[in-house]
Image (cartoon, rainbow, N blue to C red; front, side, top):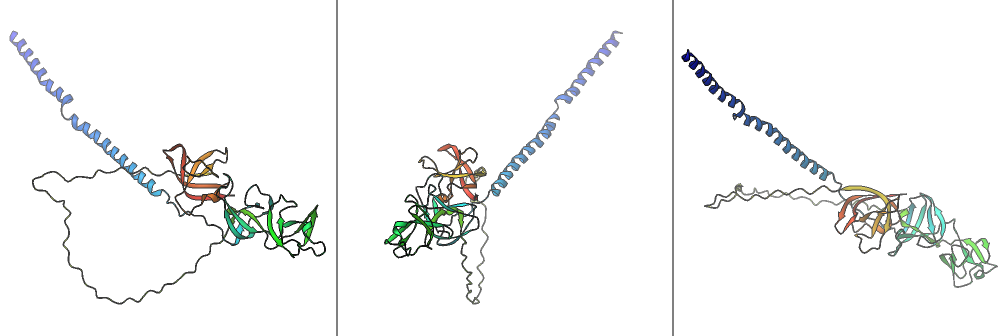
Length: 344
């Protein structure tokens, strides 16, 4: 009986010893390592795909950035011009504080005598003005004491034409001795007369447009081609692209590290009024003012030598360009202009 118990007990111990390796193989076998590796591999591939996608998106954004156009302003020249805005004031002098002698509608034609540009104009005042022939419907004024009553001719050597009945009005031209005048009305000691053909006035140049003369096309005759003897170039052995190997060294060739691509440019579109600034600390002499609160939104900057921003002062525009912060002026962004659209 005792022998039977011993045999049974031995069999139980042997079975338990055999069961331990099987359990350990189920929990601690190397089979788990490949499984973990298979779960990490797709994640690593996904990360690589995401980084590659981000780089491609950056490249796409950089390619879509608009290229700066050839910006320039065209000064007015003597000749015909067309008014491009409605109810444009024509003034007695080339400044905003001068009196208005008439108004012109959109599409009206005027004759430009010259363009005048002021360097010291006010922040909101246009710098470029057009001196034009006074429109025919506008009359001028002279003092009656300088007009001979019978023939209505000018008595002095020179007589100033005024925009109104008084010495405080602007001078719009000049008459000389013996010139006849046609009376249209009177007020006190002043006579209203028809304006001579050389009387003039002023208006902001920004409201005039002139047709640009296109030079005629020139055809250049190509010289005759003389057949030449063609000689075959000598055969050149293809150059090897393998790097030179220095005897006794096993070091690989140096690899230039890849440089990170610059961030894409920030291209914006802003609407506002152009105003001049005389601050020596500003990065530009021009700024864009909000039409809502009249506060400065951006400084305006151009790299084009042909774009005269003085001509846009006081105008409402839509400007497109690259917006960035300068480390010297961190509180006010600067727009490098790529396009300007003038609004009425």
